[in-house]
Amino acid sequence: MNIGGYLPAGLMPVMTGYAIDRVGFTAGATGFAVALTAIALAAGAAAVLALRHDND
Image (cartoon, rainbow, N blue to C red):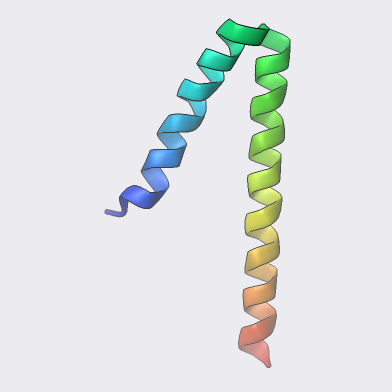
């Protein structure tokens, strides 16, 4: 197993909980959604670039 994937996956919801307590549910949940979207877009872009590089 690789801890590199489990650590952020566990920290994101915990940090979201702290954010919700601090700034409210709507802002905390929106921040969580924005963070997940940014991570997904970055990972998708990295995958596309890696596949393009492999095909060259």
